[in-house]
Amino acid sequence: MIGQYVQGNQPDQQATYFYDWSGQPWKTQAVVRKILAELYGSDQKTFPGVCAIAFNYPLIAFVGEPMQVPNSAALPVEQCFLRLDPPNLILTALKKSEDGNQVVLRFYEAEGYLSDARIELPRAIRSAWRTSLIEENQESLAPNADGSLSLKIQPWEITTLKLAV
Image 1 (tube, helix red, strand yellow):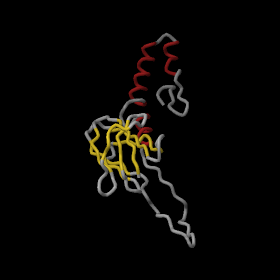
Image 2 (cartoon, rainbow, N blue to C red):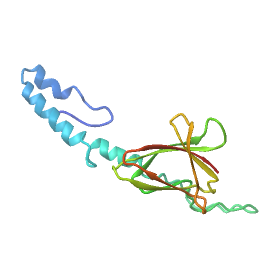
Image 3 (cartoon, rainbow, N blue to C red):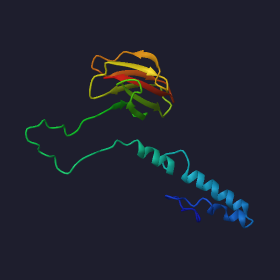
Image 4 (cartoon, rainbow, N blue to C red):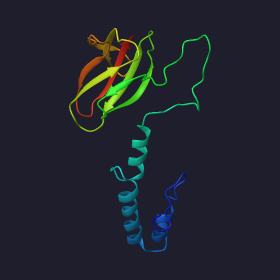
């Protein structure tokens, strides 16, 4: 809490302007600057920074005890549906393509580095294309022998891929 400003589910945006309404605009300016710097900055300690990082943590699903199902194949305790490395590549979309049974994957480079991306799915990638945002094929990419895909990603680049598995 800064003064009467509370950052929560419904931030009290007008509280900072009470000074201005009471004839002391310099106090409003000081409080607004402090709020912007301490709560809405771009570093990892501010509210948007913490929320942005939290959205990029992997989801973990579990049930209390593993179930024993007789006469059926057991599912693995853990399986990766998609591996996207290195960690500065942030997944923003994973969906079925509009024009077929391919998988569309969209991600961006978030830290300003030239990166060597590596993508792995549970099944081998048979073919891959770099596409536009509307999924028009632009460049064919050759998958690796192990069924993964490797490609160079420029700093800050948004990449859309169409993968056939």
